[in-house]
Length: 236
Ligand code: NDP
Image (cartoon, rainbow, N blue to C red):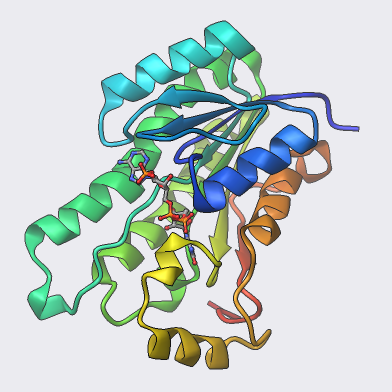
């Protein structure tokens, strides 16, 4: 059985992050989420942080360490989209998405790695997306930010793998959250038809893969990209 761990999830006040936090709580772990507003599920500690601000993340980690102990499992989940076609995409549309999805993950992981190196144990899980490797018209910014997480996890694996730390990517397909609810209905229908499973997934179906990756059963998996996409991205 996996021992109880201290877990921190960024963007845990709604969507996939909230569900991941709920699942870790249900499995008996000590769980904290970061939020810019609102709060995580019952049983989780909510700390205020914005992943675009290293100082706020540092303060959040310090609070979690004081209340729950050193962070052993970190899930870099916070993410945004600013979808539009390339010629309409402003530099701010591009850099805002990179700053949150990619540099935000870097800030989170860097801060988490301090305690993990000391403990010689850690689980780093980066929430990417099927479109990171599959590509997506209108998502040049988002897709670039998500594919870069693969390079990040693999470099972390090479750098930290000898210290009992694993780093993996989870690449969800279409999951029922605010992010996909924002898509026009005809686009949602078209996506559903292209998914071999014929449906979107629930956040819980992602959460269960994340908690498994953090478990002792997955201790020899590192640098992997685990799709949770109903077959959408096969081979990518
Ligand atoms: P939501 O839009 O439902 O939630 C996004 C979360 O990220 C919110 O908690 C939000 O906080 C947080 N967040 C955004 N920007 C920041 C920031 N600067 N600092 C801190 N927190 C921030 O998204 P999902 O739950 O759908 O997505 C979660 C992750 O999964 C994202 O990385 C997304 O790219 C990825 N993903 C989602 C898919 C889907 O189909 N839904 C598919 C593939 C990947 P706040 O409430 O304050 O805005």
